[in-house]
Length: 65
Image (tube, rainbow, N blue to C red; front, side, top):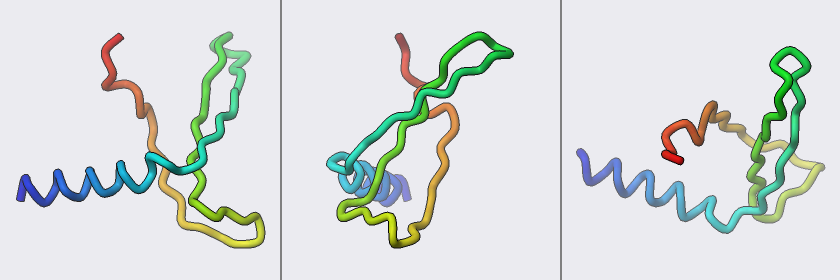
């Protein structure tokens, strides 16, 4: 089971590693801070099509600084 999860996450990582990435800065007047939303687009992205979406909150919270 553990091996299957590793393979699944590795496949997801590799499929998104070369994806076009964009960012959007959102300012919070209440917190007085800027927040960055990272957006990964699929290869061959077109505004004329619809795509499934995955939202990941606090994606960098596990990264030690």
